[in-house]
Structures are given as structure tokens and as C-alpha cells.
Image (cartoon, rainbow, N blue to C red; front, top):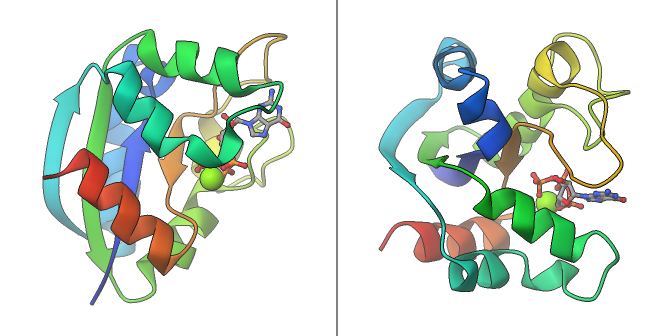
Length: 136
Ligand code: GTP
Ligand code: MG
């Protein structure tokens, strides 16, 4: 069975949406395999977002991810990597489809930070790499 890394980002935790997001994951039929809450150190975030290093939104993104507690989830299910990204909706919550986590619960992006509630791994390779970073 496939596994993915889901992160409930600091905006999701601060807005008390952890339960609602977990509810959607469980209601879909995915299995919660492991859960932890943490304030992520910069080294972990730098490794996690290595592909975005140098992009204009990189620094504000990492600062946002350092700004509060994150809930990290190991989630299992049939085609869960693609399936969770579908459940999450597209990156920008302003235009994410209704029925998705970002579309229903996300707010418009501010000028500085990228607050879109959740992260989900985007491929089998990313999932393996990211799960090893966040759960070891
Ligand atoms: P994740 O599941 O969080 O990885 O989202 P994603 O795969 O939809 O987006 P991507 O991996 O391309 O970018 C990672 C994160 O960087 C996003 O979730 C946003 O928080 C932020 N981000 C991505 N692209 C942009 C952008 O063009 N502008 C800004 N301001 N932020 C962005
Ligand atoms: Mg991504």
C-alpha cells in the first residue's frame, strides 16, 4: 500500500483546523499510520523544501513554516499520493476547487506568506524522501 507525507501547516494548526483536516483524510478511507506535532527546525525545512531553494517565495515560505506548530502525518492508502493532492486542491487557495481542503477552508494568499493549510508529497520518490525526513 502506498504512503504519503501530509503536513498540516502552521495556519491549519493555528486556525484549529487539525480535526477537520484529519476528518477529511479518514472519511476518504485513508489510514493514519503515524502522527506527530512539532515545531520544525530550519534544517528540516531546508531539506524538505530543497527543490524550491533560490525561488522568490522560498524564504517567506520557510519563515512561515517556522512560525508555529506543524502536525505531520504518515498516511496510507490506495494511490494516496495522488489522491491526497486531489483532496487538498490546487496550490493557491484563492482558486482551489470547492470540496477540497484548500478550496473550502483556505484563505486568499497574503502578500508575503504561503498559507495553504496542508502539504502532500507529489510523487513516490518525494514521499519516501519526505517520510524519512519527518519520521525516523
Ligand atoms: P505542497 O503540498 O505544500 O508542496 O504544495 P504544492 O505542491 O501545491 O506546491 P509547491 O510544492 O510547488 O510549493 C510548495 C509551497 O510553496 C506551496 O504549498 C506554497 O505554500 C508555496 N508556493 C508555491 N508556489 C508559490 C508561488 O508561486 N508563490 C508563492 N507566494 N508561494 C508559492
Ligand atoms: Mg509540493
